[in-house]
Image (cartoon, rainbow, N blue to C red; front, side, top):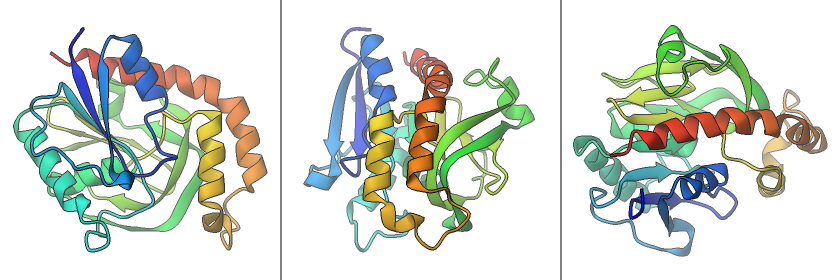
Length: 237
């Protein structure tokens, strides 16, 4: 796989590729990260890269006035879909994918912050990305927005409070509302950067408990994550 480059869009410092980057490098890919928080520009077209990966961030898809690069991201994702370049979106990245595919993104009734179970739909259980994984397993979440399923896309997973957790767009692109890429250090950064979001939400566990759960749960989550990431990358031609 030497010479195959993956383009990564990173919105904030604490939401880097994490495990995704480690798996990709181990599989022989090179990574080119566009740091949007530093003012780096989004390429005009994705078709010179082997895949496009879009990370999360605290902004919303609908915050285009405050974050003008969102319009460029949406155009890039649309072009990737048209060119059948595989796209993997995480959290905000999944929401951007849903919007680029014609869906609607809006605030949910509550936030998911911490570790929650997701359940695979029948379509998820039979999808090549998820086949053989448990029908229900725990992942790390940090979001308040959600999306509907665009025409032609398929919902592969749901949670108790958010029915759309993982979408497949076309034959080779996936949007994950949840995080499989985070390390314990990244969870700690999330909690420090987003501490204000934990206040006034009694249904969200305290930061110290979330970090304790990270130490316990991340080894298992990383096992699932490596399976999902490597299967996504293996489809790259």
